[in-house]
Length: 85
Image (cartoon, rainbow, N blue to C red; front, side):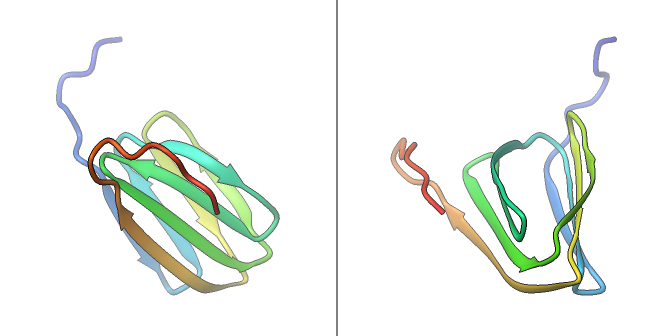
């Protein structure tokens, strides 16, 4: 099925326990208490306790934690491709 509209990415933190990414993204790393995604020219890292992956589809990711301890967003500059959590 062809996409009719190009979606821009959005990231929402809901009730300080759920992270929702809507739009194109790439999963970089996933562990028992952390996740890292790339969306456009940004890297999003989330760390918390007891990660539960609710949805990982083509353009939607929903991750829940018992509680989130940190979230960071970093811009990728000048073709930088290396990533390490």
